[in-house]
Length: 357
Ligand SMILES: *[C@@H]1O[C@H](CO)[C@@H](O)[C@H](O)[C@H]1NC(C)=O
Ligand SMILES: *[C@@H]1O[C@H](CO)[C@@H](O)[C@H](O)[C@H]1NC(C)=O
Ligand SMILES: *[C@@H]1O[C@H](CO)[C@@H](O)[C@H](O)[C@H]1NC(C)=O
Ligand SMILES: *[C@@H]1O[C@H](CO)[C@@H](O)[C@H](O)[C@H]1NC(C)=O
Ligand SMILES: *[C@@H]1O[C@H](CO)[C@@H](O)[C@H](O)[C@H]1NC(C)=O
Ligand SMILES: *[C@@H]1O[C@H](CO)[C@@H](O)[C@H](O)[C@H]1NC(C)=O
Ligand SMILES: *[C@@H]1O[C@H](CO)[C@@H](O)[C@H](O)[C@H]1NC(C)=O
Ligand SMILES: *[C@@H]1O[C@H](CO)[C@@H](O)[C@H](O)[C@H]1NC(C)=O
Ligand SMILES: *[C@@H]1O[C@H](CO)[C@@H](O)[C@H](O)[C@H]1NC(C)=O
Ligand SMILES: *[C@@H]1O[C@H](CO)[C@@H](O)[C@H](O)[C@H]1NC(C)=O
Ligand SMILES: *[C@@H]1O[C@H](CO)[C@@H](O)[C@H](O)[C@H]1NC(C)=O
Ligand SMILES: *[C@@H]1O[C@H](CO)[C@@H](O)[C@H](O)[C@H]1NC(C)=O
Image (cartoon, rainbow, N blue to C red):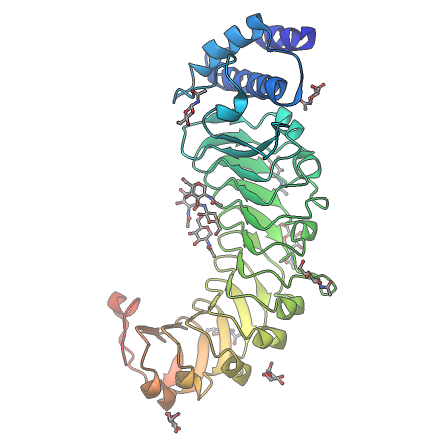
């Protein structure tokens, strides 16, 4: 307990300008809170009164008063779930939309039995603790979306049970480490960050559980890797609003379950070839604002589930496919600003969403 008191003292002694105060306060708040939490759950000692009192007063300053009370079992605290049995291991920390701020304190890495982490829609700042993923190797669900987290993702190769990772709408940068796409990952959403360089799919790796891959609104600037074709369960692939170049790899046409292929606003080139007809479950094909060239596959309208076909602002040429007349589900079609023969050259803004055939 001596250590705790010292930490508190150190934190209090940090120089506090008026601007720094809220941040420091929450740093202290989170750090202390985790330490407190560990005591009743993992330790045998009762929580030190001085510590718990100071903690309590800190907790009460949180924007939403959480009922963390040192006199009660932490397993009963709001947002906390402990595992089965009497060991009292915290397995869930579920506090979305609580107005929480400050950095995610490294003490979180002591919750080693943690499987579910949801801190989405808060205002967490700074970068993730360096050993977050290596310490919390039991994590299955991570939702840190809609915060203000920055910097690179920490090393992640130990996180072998991960199923859902949602880091969308933060300010993460650097590369997306391919090690984070462990074989168990089913949903991977890092959209709306500042990740650069490559799509983290290696040819040799196993991504057979992956169903949703959303990389849109980043700064990815490489090509689409052929390995994408090995993600055999992939249903949704979104990587629009990046700077991807090169052509669609043929391997992408192996993805028989693909419902949504959304790659708009990139620098993709080359043809949209007939392989697209392999994607019989395709509902949405969004490739607008690229530099695709050549004809639109003549049979495209025979993709019977197609609802959205947005190919505008490309370099597509040739005839408007007659098969589109067969496309009964189609509700949004835009082929404008291509040099197709037989299309209307109308360029009104209302073409943007709903042009029906
Ligand atoms: C804290 O609040 C939650 C519900 O918000 C409740 O289920 C729990 O029993 C409370 N715990 C304590 C220690 O009061
Ligand atoms: C996290 O909590 C929010 C509630 O605001 C919820 O919408 C979201 O689905 C949760 N995340 C996961 C992965 O379940
Ligand atoms: C984790 O807990 C141990 C023992 O309680 C403590 O010494 C250590 O500082 C904690 N780690 C972090 C990162 O807080
Ligand atoms: C990533 O963001 C951090 C913090 O904002 C910055 O210091 C670093 O230079 C950025 N790195 C890259 C590769 O953009
Ligand atoms: C994050 O992604 C998961 C998986 O798609 C989803 O269940 C969850 O609702 C998302 N979180 C938010 C806050 O939208
Ligand atoms: C990824 O997260 C964003 C929110 O940031 C959401 O709009 C989008 O639908 C998610 N992608 C998938 C494939 O669920
Ligand atoms: C991206 O994130 C920013 C800030 O978190 C948010 O304001 C914006 O609406 C998000 N954009 C998308 C397309 O989700
Ligand atoms: C790939 O990963 C899945 C799910 O984790 C596993 O069932 C399968 O055996 C792995 N396949 C190979 C070839 O490693
Ligand atoms: C991608 O951008 C990085 C800088 O962020 C640059 O160093 C690299 O050469 C670019 N790669 C390609 C293929 O353009
Ligand atoms: C389309 O699927 C067939 C059989 O599933 C496969 O042999 C062929 O290579 C695929 N075509 C392309 C272009 O991927
Ligand atoms: C697409 O068309 C534009 C303007 O017509 C031209 O500058 C560009 O080189 C073309 N790109 C390709 C890949 O054909
Ligand atoms: C429309 O569908 C019918 C039945 O599947 C097919 O015979 C015909 O060739 C299709 N028309 C076009 C123009 O592709």
